[in-house]
Length: 179
Image (cartoon, rainbow, N blue to C red; front, side, top):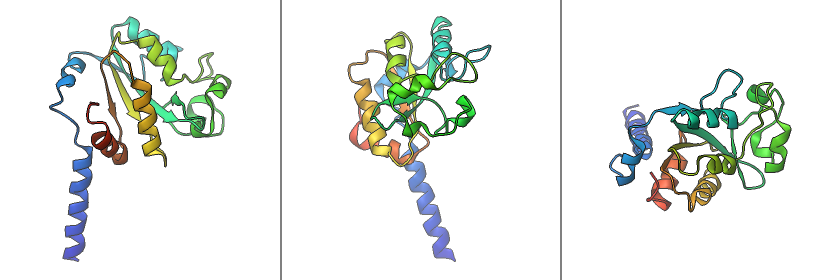
């Protein structure tokens, strides 16, 4: 019994160590001093993680937090849940879609559709900071690689985060320059 408790404590400590961010990263200062709109400035006909919510956040002087998933075509979609049901009312998973198919999914009974990550990057273009939440399924490595590749050449401040310790571990090990 005592050995099981010790092993459990070691595993918990390892898990917490994997989640520890880069609090001393020199680029972190660029992210401080901003207010952030979680999933964009949504409400009043602007669904969460929609281009309308992101435009409103940018116009209001906010940085944004957004969620990205890897789709079957290797591109990234901006949506919180893996399931499409809550936000679009349709059955299915975001990971089974292609970029072209995003236009077929309306968000919260509006004309807004699921945006691609590229659309959001083009909108923000370094004007305000981004907090990018990596939403991994069984694709942590591919997701991290795609997100890092998408950010190549991006001029604005950003950081990447995830509740999946695999993503954090990959970022720390393979991409130490990313906050």
